[in-house]
Amino acid sequence: MNRSMIDLWVGIFVAAGFAGLLFLALKVGNLASFSTADTYQVNAKFANIGGLKERGPVKSAGVVVGRVASIRFDGETYEAIVNMNLEAKFQFPRDTTAKILTSGILGEQYVGLEAGGDGVMLKNGDRLRLTQSAVVLENLISQFLFSKAAEPPAKEPAK
Amino acid sequence: MLIGALRARMERLGGTVTSAVWRLGFASRFLFYLCLHSGTALRRFRLTIAQIYFAGVLSLVIILVSGLFVGMVLALQGYETLQRFGASESLGVLVALSLVRELGPVVAGLLFASRAGSAITAEIGLMKATEQISAMEMMAVDPIARVVAPRFWGGVISMPLLAALFSAAGIFGGYLVGVQLIGVDAGAFWSQMQAAVDWNHDIMNGVIKSVVFGVAVTWIAVFEGYDAPPTAEGVSRATTRTVVTSSLAILALDFVLTALMFTGGNH
Image (tube, rainbow over all chains, first blue to last red; front, side, top):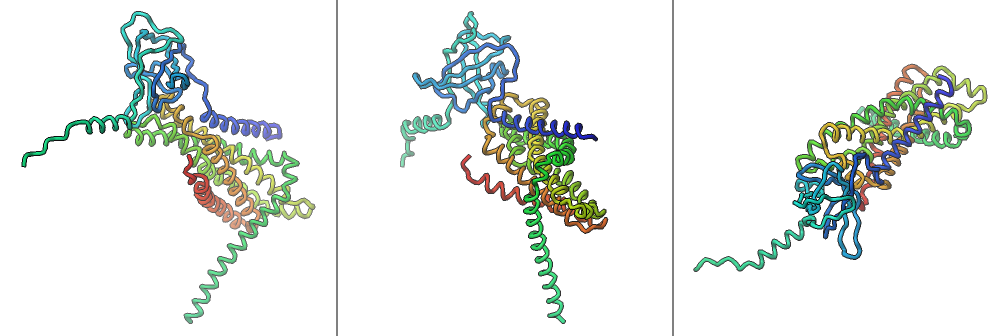
């Protein structure tokens, strides 16, 4: 093996090593979306998004129809604005409901879409008006406790 | 009679300890001398490049294939456990964190020790046995600067790159099995991984580990080779010792480094 071949292979090796490191680094940063399908973007406001993350799935009837593009905080209404990229082949009516749901008990959170009955379809940049926030377990427990406390105590058996 | 036997035993124990400490001291002085005389290896970088070729490029196949399979097995085993808790989307986190933090540096280090470390020891030991080292000294060429230092730096440079490639191949293997074969959601696989893996805390600590392992393995390999008795048996023993000692060193250092890096509890 002559010198230039060795140099070539070492060059490839070092470049591959740094490419591997770059690949690992991109795991941390934002990996460019690798979905090349045609999409349109809609957004929705939620009072609480729970543990929803960017690039999380958007599902309708349990089937993935899009991805969460970005999540922002609206400083005026103190709500979260979730932008979603939906695949162009799936058209939804304008009065579609967006809910933040959880898959399983410990599973990740996703946006669930429930189609409405409107004849007009969603266009790029539209806003979903009907939303339902994530269920926060602590709120649920405190609601339960308060409703329990509000109930009249069970009658003591007569002595 | 009894006292004599006891005395002989004590002497043996003392001799073992003394020679171990003596060897450690010799190895430390060797490393110090090696660093002092690395000027040639770094100035005439071509010598080091040839060693990167032997230690790094030729280890590439075993590193990539092992990484791929380790990642695929991690994905299979991880999915088996995670899906019981309905958390199979966290598969990416499991695969990436275990590879980047632990398995990447450690398994790549072990493979590097047995693939490249043993070769370095055998080569230097055989050079000594065939009196090539003495011949260099006769020609006023410093064998440490000409033979040992390029091998040392070649190994130290190759090891972090190999560990990074191991982790990358492993994550790709985990993706193949987890997403393509089992059908975990691809977006959740990558996005949860990205959310959980931190550049400084996880990836850089893995790189630091692999650099430390690279120094340890190559140091042991060049020292054992240079210190080997110039016989066929001596070289073979030195090669075995390289693999055993550097594997143990990697595991022990890994524990120490992990204890230093990951017990802050501030993640």
